Image (cartoon, helix red, strand yellow):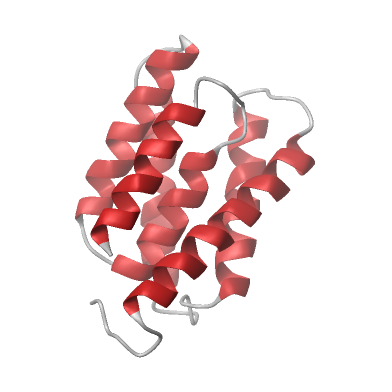
Length: 137
């Protein structure tokens, strides 16, 4: 299962310079909901640094946003049932809206919607691979 996640991580790294859709948020949402491990924070930090370097922004802004986003997802796992497609869709959509609004992109609704569909695809593929009854905590 971790190999599939690494393949999706590679795709995010390849697609990030091509498009402004925040695929990293969808990947982090699916990874946080399914794995519930602390290494997701390191992944968020690394993806944020990579995005800042590729987009020629001040280093650390995307990392800070992505780490706070993952932290909020970890906090909400105690209050809500997080391993559902509804939670993945809504959280990645709202995260995408906020991310795109903060960094000044256009057409934030459409891009957030596409990011949410990417998050659902990643979540569904990883969920099927791990089995719906396996516990990953």
